[in-house]
Image (cartoon, rainbow, N blue to C red; front, side, top):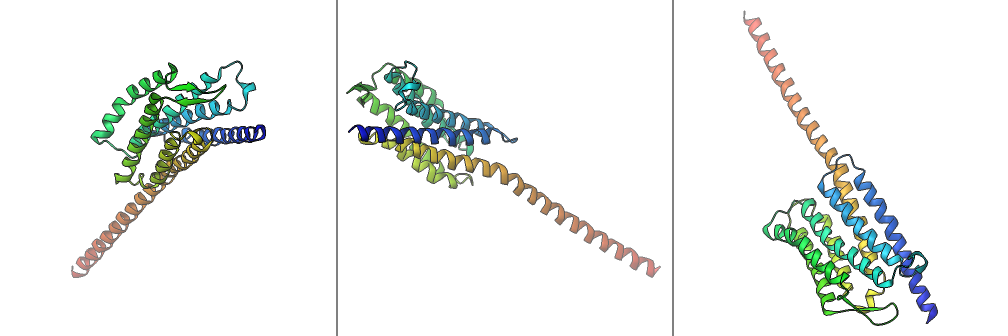
Length: 255
């Protein structure tokens, strides 16, 4: 039993450290871009929420780093990171693919209310009930809070599936995977594993690369298109000048 718990703790610690390193790298890379817009900042906030999630998860097996923090506070921090992760991902996707549909606007407007209510449920202690020394079970309100997160993930998935924006297509698979990560939190045996956070880490790396790819290669594509137009106009101008010159030479010979 003790070996099993030690192995599980080691896996959670390693997964949390991997998450912290990967997410920090992509967050820094996206923020370092010269061409930054609101989508970059929203991706950074999404990444920051995952860092909170990973640090809270890391404090589970590494009790020495808690510095007196009670385990229920760690659980509350963990839940806060997950809640922020779901909502900020939805808002990021909406801005990145330029979705301005009515349902998207409504969900963005009520997002602060959903977050505040969810965090009140968490920090008031009514989302969990303690079942052991450091084990907790979700209450009906806890399931409701996770359901709201899954709802925002499903809404983000709907956006990228129906959108005709060229940025939406490469985001369909990671958004689907993130939805599965949140759904796994509803399953008690999976909540004690690093499955959800590892999926979220992979999603962050995937989405971060998509952001960087569009910001690196779209300007080059635009520049090539501009050069093509300039070359076409230049050839047309040269052709017109040659025709005008030939016309003038003909007139000169006739005179």
